[in-house]
Length: 309
DNA sequence: AATTTATGCAACCGCGCTCAA
DNA sequence: CTTGAGCGCGGTTGCATAAAT
Image 1 (cartoon, rainbow, N blue to C red):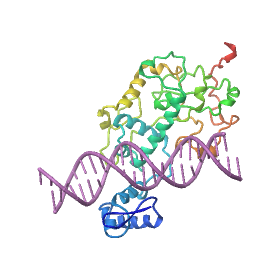
Image 2 (spheres, helix red, strand yellow):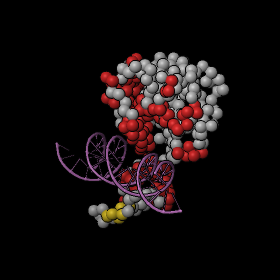
Image 3 (cartoon, rainbow, N blue to C red):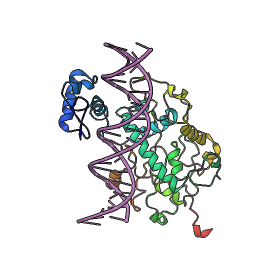
Image 4 (spheres, rainbow, N blue to C red):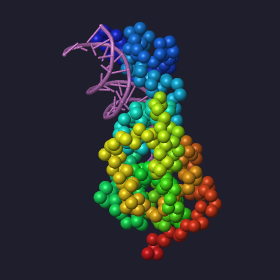
């Protein structure tokens, strides 16, 4: 893709070629990541300075985690910081070494689309509707909106009859309510894909920013101290309000639990479920509990059969 | 196997800010 | 004070690939 600017110079657009990357890297090596416009004025590349900068920042800069999916920790950081900062992707990215604002933005966009799809399938009640009776079961939309829950994917619904009595467990991140889920017959629970284990990002700090002190009493993974003063954006406010609402939490099965560190389906600790992971590590009805401790179901109750009601 | 649909990501665009001339 | 270049940021688009049919 090419066009000409007012000086009748050819401006190349579109995907970058390997040779262009090399030229750009050489330029940065010589002159540093600045004066992007001079790359074109020096006749090195037929690209705008803007385009050069973007390419460097998003793809060529050293230590970028390109081609690597967001880890659970990174997901949690994004979710929490988005609730605090809003769509300040560049700011959020400073807390994620190796991630760019574009990475964060794309991750969030993808997540929002997924949430939208899920909501269409099983709408999340609004704030006033969250006083649900305590026996109800969280939908996938609940889980995606409530980052302090760990979730177990139950795999294919069609084989649910084979799993009677096998209740996945989810826990609050405060480590309380260590009780089994009383009811897992709700099919809404069968496609939960996100599992965000307890995040220890006490040590994470914005890149090139001052360290922060942890706040041990905070039940969520710790955020930088300076982030605590930022007013929540409406979306995040609603979420946090919902989470701090005991009725909202009570809407989840009592004592949803998932022991920290426990393996779970579709997630290997390096990132959320992905197509590749699913291909490489297919979860089959016959093996889907293989990774769980042998005693994990000992204290679970039988799920009442629907016909038995 | 072929086709369609969904998804994720790279790159562009437009706006706003800063700063030097 | 004005203006324009340079840069950074957030939103959007379009393409490549994966998944589904």
